[in-house]
Image: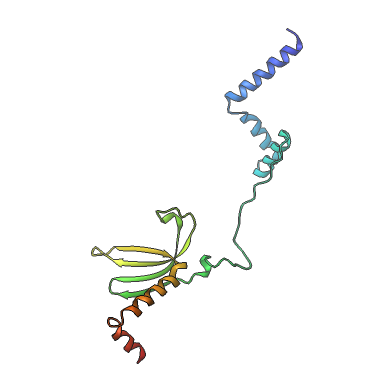
Length: 160
């Protein structure tokens, strides 16, 4: 065999060994040792320079310590309230985690929640986005205005 064939065969054997051991895990460990093993971005950057690809560092989103928050549905902008409407009915203004909902919500959101007390002491909840509160208010006002006989007693007590 010539020297070229031997080098080519040795190179192919190295490639096969790397494929069997999980794509060169030993080389990755060596890179961590030379890099200090402290930064993930550093190892990504060193891999990019070796492979000749232009990969950017991964930047994590951090919305803590914001000086001015213009996002009106932020949890710190929502005032939690619990109001008792009757013996077995509450209305709440609260933040609901997206993971608690069965729908496709992935973020927390402000909600207007109705809680109905059940016979066994548990509660049934029905939640609406808080952004719908003005629409619900208008709808309730339309119902009150269209039923003056039913609400005549409550209007008199409000005027006095």
